[in-house]
Image 1: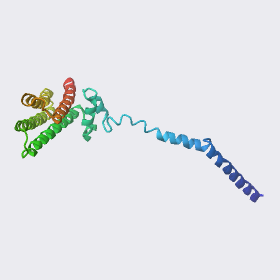
Image 2: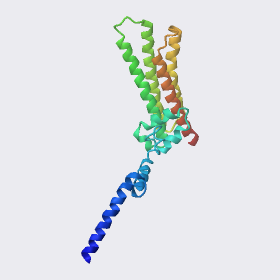
Image 3: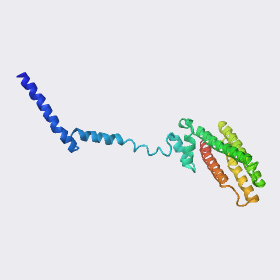
Image 4: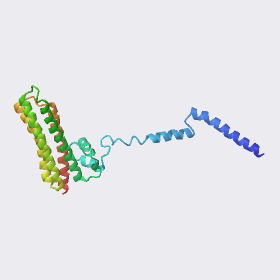
Length: 216
């Protein structure tokens, strides 16, 4: 009697399995539907990253602070590029922003200086070479002013920090004014782009420093 019961049970299991197999292939009912729903549930996390494109690693304070600036995307990109921004306070973020502007000015000074050197042996307009040399020096002065601004931030002297950053934004405009006076219409597009980039980074820095001034 026991063997017969065992055989009967085994037969039922096989029969149920054989009935479920085609059903699972032909429809989404039963356990398969649960796996299907499970699959969709597994794919639901990806929609949550939408904020990521704007600031993948930015802390909440970075986003809040950048909301107070005129160039939100640039602000987030500049701050998030520094890993310490995820734990910095507003004063730390202002220092990071100023450092980003200083790095930009330093890179422009070096690029313009290298451009003048590269053209040294070529038959180029001597006036344009002299202008580029002056522009390189002006970006160097902007870099130095931003370094001074960072020192003022460290001493919590935000008024002086703002003055230094404002001066840094003005230096490239001297370059443009000289070109307009001595070589009208010859202001290089590359220089115009460098001037705009530094101006925007300085604007971001000033906006964050203003937050510090308001709360100090």
